[in-house]
Length: 328
Ligand code: ADP
Ligand code: NA
Image 1 (tube, helix red, strand yellow):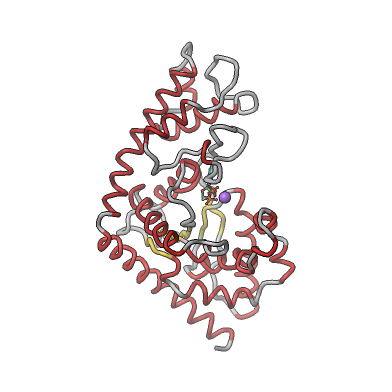
Image 2: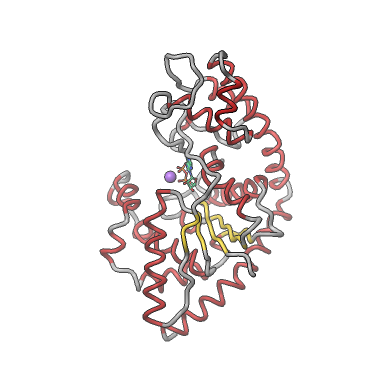
């Protein structure tokens, strides 16, 4: 039987992915390659829903692709591409926008959150229709499954509704995708405020994969903990230590109970120092690989070109059917 197809995308909106992106999403992308026909894209169309500097966006798109390759996305097994290289995304998005109720789109909570954080005059229509473009990303490839975190559930539900609506109005066209619940992912918290999600918008509390490993180790040494001494996993009472244990466990594949036992009687400083070393050991070879890809732009272009060609083979076939069904 054919391997189930999976699609996922990530925005090129930072100079580096962070530990939350890796342990919460990208590590699963790498793992899924074994049993899935995976399509992974750097979603630059999504990125311009908020203002971007063109040169910086171009650079970050390449950097994102290089980081995905360095993390283990294998372009011989998976289809890795840049969204804007495949014009069918925008084309299908338009058709789907015309199937989406205005009120239906208006119920998306992520838009409400994101738009509330901006001046009203800077909120673009693209930010509003973002989830429809996301639906197009998924439906173009007839994806069977989409890995989704909590924050993406509502968008996947919209995608499923649009697929079902289109299919019943025009005849079977789209695979209705299911949520792939990742097994090996973890939510990572801010090092300075371990009750908030680690995010690129809070520089002090984020471990960036591309920053100097020394700097990461220093951030871990200054992580906020608590006034006790015991190294124990207890999210409610010890969110800082619990977060460090989760990161440690994820990067070493040592279980949390194993770590608790190993650090019995030891101090928070020991845990932080060792975890700093674990991060350095992870980031150093990772960064070497990233620079390998960035230092050979022709090779990176070739990989992305090949990915886009393969993606277009599938995408253009879906779009042709869609255009035919709607009367183009
Ligand atoms: P950020 O929150 O830094 O803006 P994104 O929203 O671009 O990052 O997230 C990209 C991917 O990384 C998404 O799949 C998201 O769920 C995941 N992710 C982001 N931050 C974390 C985190 N702190 N813990 C786990 N997963 C995360
Ligand atoms: Na986010």
